[in-house]
Amino acid sequence: MKEKNAIRSRRLFLAASAAGLAGGTHLAGAQSSGTAAAAQPVQPPAGNFPIKSISSANGQRTTKRAYEMILQGADTLDASVAGVTIVEDDPNDTSVGYGGLPNELGVVQLDAAVMHGPSHQAGCVASLERIRNPAKVAQLVLERTDHVLLVGRGALEFARAHGFQEENLLTDRARKIWLRWKQTMSDRDDWLTPPDESDDTDKQAAAILRNRPTGTIHCASMNAGGDISCVTTTSGLAFKIDGRVGDSPIIGAGLYVDNEIGSCGSTGRGEANLQNQCSFAAVELMRSGMTPVEAGLEVLRRVSKHTVPRLRNEKGEPDFGLNFYLLRKDGMHGGVAMRGAAKFAVTDENGTRLEPCTTLY
Ligand code: GLY
Image 1 (cartoon, rainbow, N blue to C red):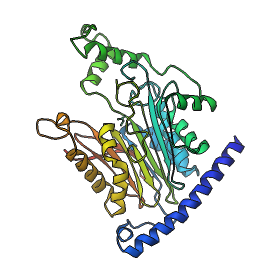
Image 2: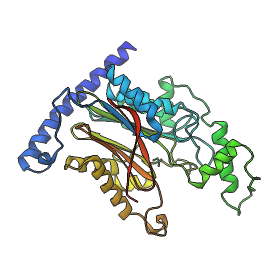
Image 3: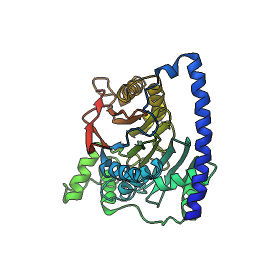
Image 4: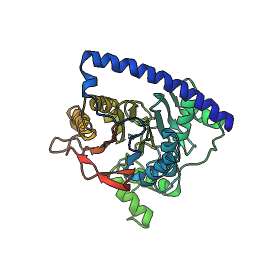
């Protein structure tokens, strides 16, 4: 374990040093052109950055854990991954990890990605089956391979090689919700609609099925040195076509961090995010001087503009949910949502709480 950490630290240190050098060069270039650098957010002196962790609304335990670990000196990526692991392990969160809703075949397929700000390194897994903690596997892809993204069988073999235990991730609750979806989806197949809801799980299933779930968890954390890392992990769109991969494990879509600027991560309709590379775009908008909320709203406007008619409501607005969680290097944070009331989790020196997202519609 000691040796493992030593290799990892050395690798991240070397990468972080290289990134630091590259960052310096880039900034000098930008300053001489008198454009992007001039608009960059003001940054506190090193060591005085506000320690904080932000997450989607299902992540209050996540941000609390990450914040506590950072106070104890943990790396921002280790802290963020430890935070989302709590939710991956929770059978009651049907959008992430163990207990996540399955694909159309009834198989739970998980996606996750991590990005380490100081080294600008990333690791991702997609369509991973039978392993409840894809974020940890994604972190190992970053640390122990020369690759960024492993999928399906290869991701599973990689997890097995590192000692992850295989298990059936489909809880009885998730199975019943999936079964009700199959039974009620169409009156032109051979599955008959079951009688009225008979127990609590059936009632919950009926409620969940009224709005097809795309839940996920994103977490980004910053330490006093201003280093930022982030993670996104999900069971993806409920009842997706076998093999469908959403935005969560795709760098630039489900998450992105530039350690000099800030981070952005997403939950909601992955296809819309993939088509607009929103997390990368939002970080670049913060580079140009926008606040987190301004940047998040601008990417939502772009998504809205590019939305096809079949995904618009009677008012012409996108009819799906899409949220972004943004953390700027100077400590400013924000959450935005395409529609409806939404919240996000924050832990900082003022404690752990939910804050409202700014909504486009
Ligand atoms: N944002 C999660 C997904 O679309 O899979």
